[in-house]
Length: 313
Image (cartoon, rainbow, N blue to C red):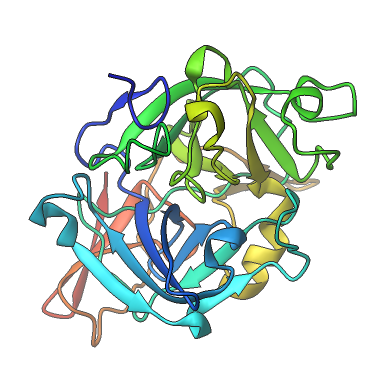
């Protein structure tokens, strides 16, 4: 039987612990399901069209199987005051289809709930890079949603220029390649209805971390989602200023400074050592907390009886 994320397979439980399961209710009485990405302990990244007309969103973190009680790891019911859609979003358009959801309180991290990294503004277009698309979506309008999280392994294709393979075959009209990133949808490597808003996951070997580099656009339910069209995502790299302006969040950076008598050199590279810094556990429930200076970190703080302990994962 074809998997729900077309051409995909079932993930391991909590293999992608930043995945958010969104159940949206609309003013019309209809409902829909989307995905999202936890980017820190207060915010989820998703698609703006998922929230358009929504009056209530049920957000669940730390879940894998929607038919079991394991999905109740962390759940919230949120109202539109918590939604922040991009100001240039126009329903039905591909560009600027990106939004944020603010959680009602700062959540504690665990093995099931971890944030993904934001990309760097200086990242290349990443054409041909391997990526993984994850979601609980349909493979056809008759199949219903997948009860378990699924994945497809694919790769980034060019989204630039009217002659680019994505613009020619995605059937989405013209769009800016700087705002959109596409993945290969051939051989049934397709997202589908219900996968909207979920991440394009990229593992950066240099940093040894997972990055969310795209937010899934509208899932295509036509011809059982089994056409060979590219998958179209909002390119997160192009929205870092907007995300940071709302959340205060920035991509990860590790800076080392070397001073001599004549020059000062600053470089950015993956961390090799851990330096403890002050973290306030006062008033926080016991649990694990991410480094607040970045969207993700190999270091985290454990609060116990209002004392902070620094760990490296």
